[in-house]
Image (cartoon, rainbow, N blue to C red; front, side, top):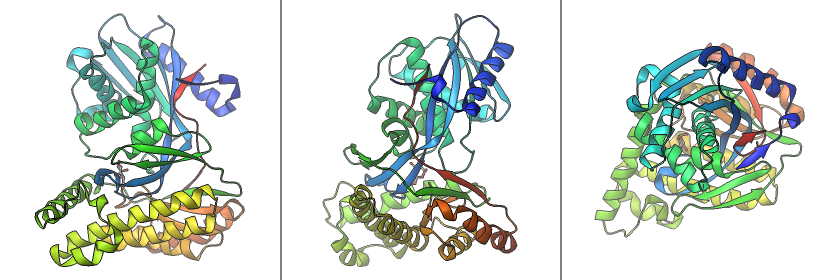
Amino acid sequence: MAKTNLMERGRNARARLGETLFELRKRFGKKGEARFFRAPGRVDWLGSHTDYNQGLILASTVNREIIVAARLRPDKTLNFYSLNLKQEVKTSIDKNKPDPRHGFANYPKGVIHELSQAGVKVPGLDMVFCGDIPIGANLSSSAAIEAAGLEAVLGLLDRPMTRWERAFICWRAENNFVGLPCGILDQFTIINSKKDCALYLDCDNLASELIPFSFDQYYLLVIDSGVGRQLVKSEYTRRVQECRAAYSTLRKAGYKIKSLSQLAPEQIKEIQPKLEPVLFKRVRHIVTENQRVSLARKVVSKKDFHKLGALFEAGYQSSSRDYENSCKELDILHDLMAKAPGVMGTRIAGAGWGGCLVSLVKKVDFREIEARVKKPYQKKTGRELRFFPVETGEAPGEIL
Ligand code: GLA
């Protein structure tokens, strides 16, 4: 398990640790030593909706994190508290079922459930979460809660587990327990990537590569459009179904493919008449997006920021036109960003249908970008933007 030193952390991070410990003792009693664990958020660089099509992904951790103060209990009680949400949840190992009223706590509850399914005996726990990953900003605060919770349980029980297994425990918690049919992108990236690296992942066989990388005079700018993500669950599920439908039509038409990602770009033309227009567009996005990820893998190792930006841009066009996971506000924001200085390219972060865009930008131009984009966006949409510059972050682990 990765370990980070308390003294190497910034003042804010140390203050957050102090607060979590204070809250844990105040709410759940002074008995028993707590330990600290953490996990970063993630940002996807390319590979939009390719994960559940066994396709390719390029992503990284971010330098924002969820921390958890945790300790074992002698009984079967499960206590959770979120300092960010000011929400306390009390349940027990025997009653560990999904509950919509439990909000954030469903993530660590899901992890505990999946650990038990995998044969790990988990006792009662006290856990207080706190973090600086903005909620709803497509930086995967939920997968970070899962990963930090899992680090804590495994650390406290002194139980080894491979990174693969960890990613799947968290992925199953999200799919089976929380109930979002997501791919492996978020959990795999958070658990397997590292600081100063981009992660390239083939979701077909889970072969991955850590590409050493530094942003130098650039960073990724995640911009929250202020449009809530109410549509995500229904639209996401619909896209998963459309991809399945396209796949089974092509199989029936004689294509011996294991997934849509096995189609080559040269086959796009020939499959068009075999699919309904909407399904064809979905497939075209998946096939071209995989191709963009392959190109980006080479571009990233050469640190060619211009080419990487151009691939972001092409990804955006494909998402907007073919996968239709953009929305009016994201389109407005994208067009404003395209005219701002120092912006290499912009794409949709995470699932889409609101939420955030992510741009590759020159650090020195940040203030100018903000100035050029904030007000016009507000004028056109009536919404406030939030800007989150990110770089890569440390892998999950214990804070000592
Ligand atoms: C969400 C899901 C991921 C992935 C992206 C789209 O973030 O959680 O698994 O499908 O959308 O690329």
